[in-house]
Image (cartoon, rainbow, N blue to C red; front, side, top):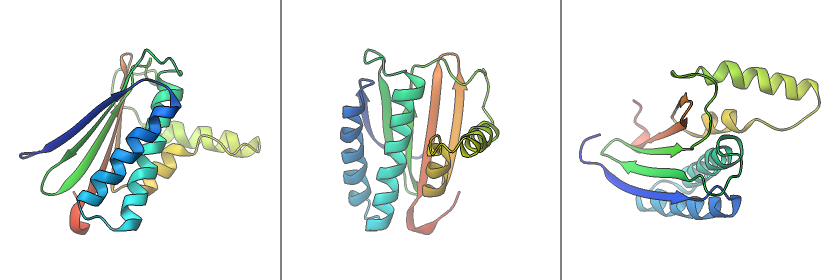
Length: 150
């Protein structure tokens, strides 16, 4: 990114602190003059990603922080959510969509309405990247300004 502006927050892995990050997302989206609908998309995507980091990554261990960085450049807002979990079983970029598809199909077959967060996030943002290792998972959400794409 060229001359980005950053907002960084580290929260304990406690779901109550997700609200803090969601409020920051709303403020950042409004400051960037995103439409109300786009701000709502941003808030929901960030909320889902942070909740995943807390619950699935850090296993609700409050001493393990979740780092959230909002970075803005001329073209886009990038939100990077990092947990301290054990990762998704790989030391390389994860093909998360294969894993998400399997979990979603299994849950549908069992009548469960859970584990659809990643698909929801993907639908709400312009670009989604997931990288995982034994040191944790990083989810990067990108929302392009003025309808631009990568």
